Length: 168
Image 1 (tube, one colour):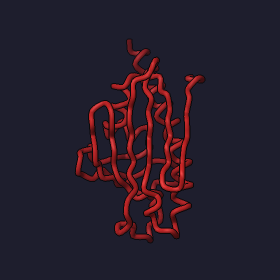
Image 2 (cartoon, rainbow, N blue to C red):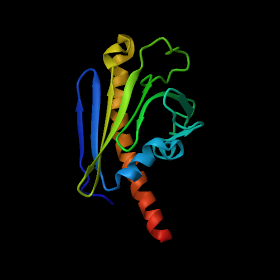
Image 3 (cartoon, rainbow, N blue to C red):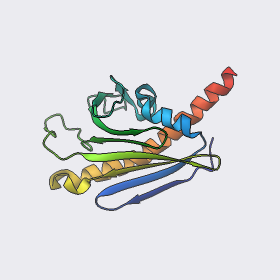
């Protein structure tokens, strides 16, 4: 296990910011973020299409209790090895609500090489534009969600490293 991993959280009312030091190369972290199948493994979503700038990527969540939820993101940036970004409607889980007229939030992952691995930062911004009736719940749920997802990518990369070592 990576017991000495550091994770930092910052937030205000408009954005959530999480950072984690991963004991994996920038190339491996980049692949886990931008290969839609690998992303789906740690993010717990069965994406149907690859990530392409300007296009939607979508699929069903595989996280227990959220299997009825269809994740849909619009990719806005893929800058190799440094930045991956998309927009989405945060915590849009009520099937009776049409979220399409809402301004989406932006999720931006950035990577930076550090001693012993990669610093991964995720920033989700734009919560101030989420309708007031659901803003605080969306923020609260995504605050906790990003904390979990940062651990998920860490565990994914750790397990994939173990798989690679057992093959060699």
